[in-house]
Structure formats: structure tokens, C-alpha cells
Image (cartoon, rainbow, N blue to C red; front, side, top):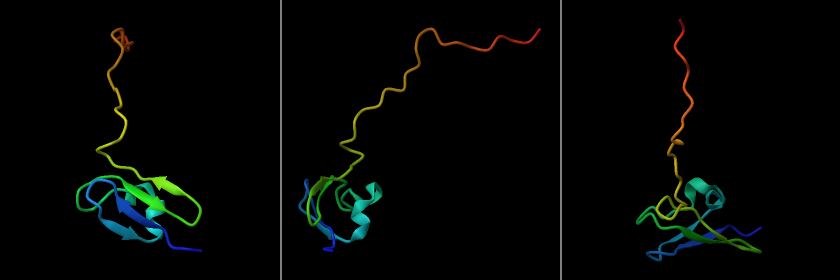
Length: 70
């Protein structure tokens, strides 16, 4: 089996190794851009915290709360 190779989509840096299959190692160590990872049979778009989807953590306006004990 061929070792995965990757190229940064932002700065062009090159990487290789089995760790690229783990999301923790799918961003560029130089610029933080996501890596384009090539394995034997597929191309995987890596993960970068800079290009991750926005998560909305705002609570609803009518937030339930515990009533104080008498």
C-alpha cells in the first residue's frame, strides 16, 4: 500500500505519512491551510480550523432555568 502524500492548498507545502489519515494532522504546520491528501485510490480534502464551518452556540431566548428550592 502506498504512503499517503499531501499538498497544502494555501502555501504548497508537501507532507507524507500515515498520520495524514487522522484529522489532527490534516492542516499545514506552516500556514494552517487544509491539506489535499492523495492515497492510492482517492483524494481527501483535509481539515483546517481556519476553513471549518461556523458553529452557532447561542442559547435560545427562552432558556429554561431551574426554579430555586423553597
